[in-house]
Length: 464
Image 1 (cartoon, one colour):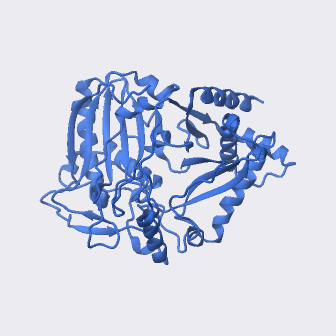
Image 2 (tube, rainbow, N blue to C red; image 1 turned 45 degrees about the vertical axis):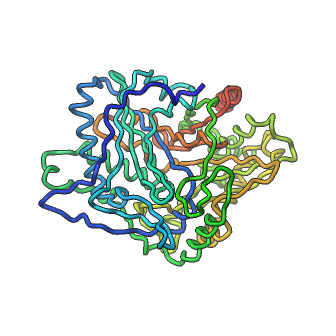
């Protein structure tokens, strides 16, 4: 079932520029280079998220006269502080590398405003077809030589709530960058006052972004290595122009379901203690590793019909490198600063009773390997690789440490946040819990029968 063709009332499509006025005109043209981690992600598809906000008072009139004007104005002010994100990514013929360009006359972000009569509660709280989310995703402009960096769509569900969807270019931003932008936008929106008509409000120190590319040292060789890799890559269905900024096409299935599963602090403690017993009481790994291992193992059990004992499974994730570089970067560095990690494991070990112990051990080894130097590890990677026959790849996206649920625009924090991008491939998302500190949410997209098995295993596993 495909919901992309469902009717949606588009109320407005507008261009939101960074805030400026005659009293303080500091917006000038500039360009910003990509770092090695940006180039690693150059041709991957945009990342899409949906933030759900439940409201008691969300009539069309209240939305259009109160909520929407504040959200739009605060977005303009936020772009003033995150100026490069109002620009675009370009790869001109006379340029060796793609660059971020900001041109004051024309730049800003695309904002789509829509209205829907679909069941809001069903969309954020129930198991549903993954494609039901697609009408609420923000479109992003993409061409061979020019790509937008960021776009948003706000959709009102009268008398229920609204959504804010973000779509960002993965060659410019990572998940932590988006979280900082969304939290900054929300902070400005809920603190709007009359003074912002004269000068933009300031951000608190913990929200001030850093765009300084000179702080990443000794990575020049990596940048060209990754760039040359993309230039030489030829994939079926991809653009014949090697310098094209069009992302790699990935098929999006229409017959899969989406659901979110929550781990409370007590659940996580229980998993850790259970695995500790299987390790003979030797618990030396952080609880977050056990949650990942548990989720990976359950997904493998769901896929067990397609796995044989001699098959291998590749677990993959992206690790934040801001504190792992030497010297370390600011946590507020805007851009990609992640490295791809993976570990190859034996399916037969995962499908045993001690599968979670085995998965936790291998994941811990992989993460500890980053201590030997992020840039050294990065030299061993290529952005896109073919998977060997018989190997299943299961990826996790996101982190429970980004604070996404802090994006309160003044009407309460999100009721749910969906990482829509996991529609593609065998992936699941990870995020902090909305309801309690220390909890974790796992987002999944699976076939109907697989989702039923996962749900049964998940509930049973936490009760044992």
